[in-house]
Length: 326
Image (cartoon, rainbow, N blue to C red):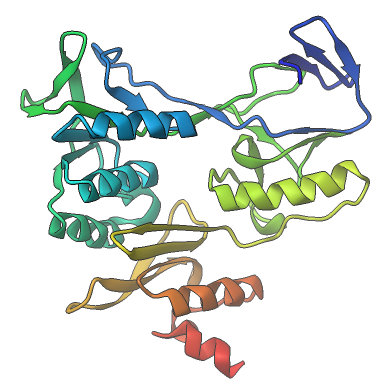
């Protein structure tokens, strides 16, 4: 095992910390990312935690055993999963986020509001449209102060602000503004060099505008194809991106990808915490989300994989029935 400090893609060489230089015919970059620490006063307080590794999770759980109040910074998937976990352990939990509702940027306000209501039914508190001005206390955290002056008691804070791709050691290759590397549909960066996972920005579905996805499932799929590519077996990555999370025994799935949509068509039962959302772009369903609709979301993975231009009318209120009829 060696610690890599540099990659020269033109010379096809990898430099290691101990001075070793390795020549390669094919190499795979799967460096992942580093967590973004908040540029907030007193963020170095003890008990202000990040979550990336198993040891991070163990540290959070250990502190949770000694805490009654927790604050989560961020309304993304990682933040909401931690919030649910800590709430189920009996802590009083407050979520602070800039967005109006959880997942607003990724899934839109209607789905985000349904998810927020689910958490509120389990006793979670929210401070949306807000940011943290400081972490308070001495060596140990005692609370946070918001930008509006409100102070929230907390012995534990968990920050969920996403990651920055770890690509600093790569020489001779232009990185995108977010630090990612542009790859082709077969995960190639340049001759003999491949990238997989959250550092790779690649054509969506193999032939559409490029996207970067940090989902673990997508990284797992990338790894298989990139490994084949290093062995000379070129396979185009054209899978439908899928992400899911389970909180309070309720599952939320997101199938496909669209950063901007023209409309969201919602199928929901007001008496139940469930819904199905279609994200419409240029008249067709570009992506979908389902809360507690496992049969329909599983069917949507198969239907969108057929690469047809599905309209919301064609998919209907139950994609599972449609799939069974094909």
